[in-house]
Amino acid sequence: MRIVDRLRVLSVYEGFFSGGARILHSDVVAGLQEGGQYHRVLSIHGEMYREATRQKIEDDACYRSLTAAGVPVTALRAGAPQTSADGLGAFTPAELAATARLTADADVILSLKEQPLELLNQPGLPLRPIIACLHRSDPENQGPGLQHLRAAVADGRVAAAICCAESTRTAYQAAGIPAEVLHTIPNGVDLLRFRPDPRRRELMRASLGIPADATVVIFAARYAAMKNVPLFLRAAQAFLRREPRGHIIMCGAGMTPANPELRRDIAAAFIDEPQYASDIPEQAEWATAAKQGRPRSAGAGGEASRRTLADRLSLLGVRGDMEALYAAADVVSLTSSHGEAAPLCLIEGMMCGAVPVATDIGDSASIVAGHGILTPADGETIGDAWLEAAGRRNEFGPALLHSRERFSRTRMIASYSALIDRLHHKTGRASLPDPL
Image (cartoon, rainbow, N blue to C red; front, top):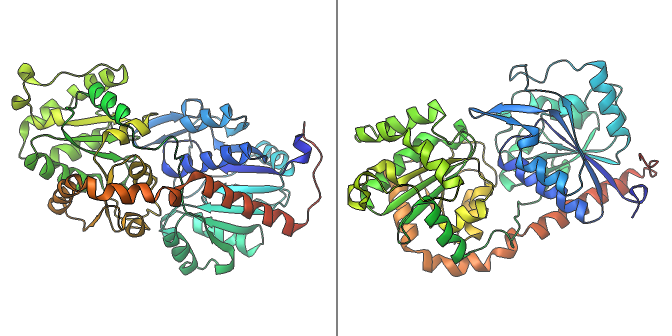
């Protein structure tokens, strides 16, 4: 099918960096492209510095997956942002001209979260219906983003907003976004990729030096305040103290020994285990060994009985093999204190057979219901819940299997496609000339 015959959609990102919203949206774009639409992506920044990690657009897994799917990706600005959290700063005439060319060649525009609306609200840009894709449950905590969203809705630029969770819809409606603009499309994942896999489980545990009979908890998150890493680490200390064969996996941007803030959090949580802090630098060697597929050492003397708590915590940073890490785990944990909507880590982990244990934030309660355990924000209680969840894996297993269709990527992408089509037909715009 020629591009001229296809519905053309432009997605605008603030930038590419490791995070659930970008992973989810990039997967949606790739799926819609596979389904017959023509998609392009405009990233305002070509590089981001987040969670103690410098992330270049070319190194990002989402960028690579999009380009591999035939989706052109353009960076408006080279390098990392130089402005503060107050906004993106002034746009140059060249930047506005480049944006105008891309928007003119689109039928519909998707804004990944509300931050790109600062660019899309600029006067003089071609008017195209915009769908804002919202992935948080705390609109007031998005800098000037909510202000830009309100302005775009009032001006008629934003014709619809997709909320990834009911908690998102409720929060944005309470913040003044009209109910008729808000549409809920729950998150979904690739069920062929995220599934229980005994072989993956065995190989991943072996590569990380984790015993086959260990009880493994995974925490997949970027190092951000909303994730409440100190609470997770307090729970980890309680869990490891009570479970001699327990093991913790931490992965995501900033979850490496190179992050001094994470090192301080670990030292504070394990203050009664002074040997732990001194062992942290060794994690760099362990992480290198894991990436190369080599088992790390078992600790002093090579005997499990002599392992310190450090030997049972893996800091892995950003990974591209999350399906294998989740398959290796017994429990997937979320300790967030605010902002979450429909946490992707819970869904991905559940679909791989890990029992979810989460704090009551966003839509976590409805996701976890019947599949795992909801906990208060208390480290000791969470540590106990991990033990309980691991002991009840056989009990939760059938419910996790029966709920797979509910969390299907196919269902999610079909819903996005239907909303985009409805919006396009409602605007009644004629087809644009082929840009190629």
